[in-house]
Amino acid sequence: MKISIIIPAYNAEKHIRKCILSALQQNIAPDEYEIITINDGSTDQTADIIQGLSKEHPTIKSITTPNQGVSAARNLGMSIARGEVILFADADDYFCTNSLAQIYEAVQENHLDILLFDYNHWGSQDKLLKGFDYDARKFCPQDIVSGKSFIKTGYMPAAVWMLAYRREYMLKMEFTFINIRHEDEEFIPRVFYFAEKIMHLPLTCYNYVQNETSFMQNYKEYGLFDKIKAMDSLNRFIKEHVKEEDISFALSEHISLRLMENLNNSFAIKSRAQWKMVKQMKKAGLTPLVHAKREGRYSFLYKYFPIAFIVYYRHKYLKRQRRQS
Image 1 (cartoon, rainbow, N blue to C red):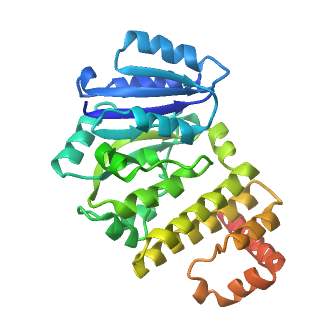
Image 2: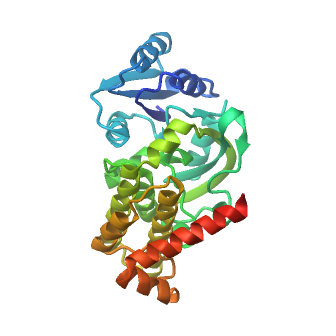
Image 3: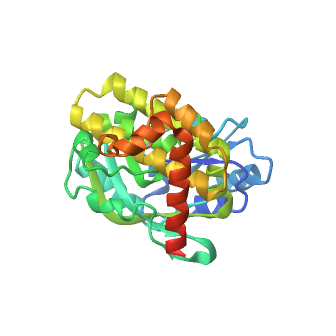
């Protein structure tokens, strides 16, 4: 078995058919890969759609579980996957036609642990947008590098569907997702750190669809606090496993960037939870300030006058929004 595609689905009746059909429209023999679909306790027609397609296409493996969240569904998928290469997809996204063969060949021919590929970012009314990590991708290595070297570039993919994973490597390291939102951002740096060979394939293989429902789900208030928990987990990983000072610094800066992004998202959704967020970050020993030593006065505010810190950064966010409008 060459490839296993893992697709968790919860109340995805509007999108799941397109996602699965895209995974079937590939330049690889149907008996050489599997599509593992995990219906995560859906209450709509998701299960019926998946089961109907699985009867027509033996490539599809249909599993239904009680609702446990996307992390548990992905972990289950990894535990039963048989392919040499593992891919993930979200149920409201879809693959580019005839892209799987190139992904598999790149991983196998270069003996990679991880392969990074490109994607399209679709907004409302089928508008093609600039990828959400477009600016950061300029730091992406062009050669095969170790995971540690990749981390030092400062660029870190934010979603697991951007990557292909050698299953042997994943099993050896016993990687699993933590069961909270923003699990990707905690999972990927851990996977990269131990990887011996990572490569970027400049080929668009995936279509990310930013629909309003999924976007707002990620940025409800509990999503803001889950992101802090995810970064806390990653910070504990750094303390326990990362011995190299430069890599520890790069990952710590990554955490700070994600936390500041999280704070800005709280302003974007007009949340008033910033005080609780700061308390949770401080309790975990986290700071949202990048290059904190060079931002001494803001670090001072964060440490001793958190209300003033919040007011300042809300003002900064609103000023930036007015300038962009």
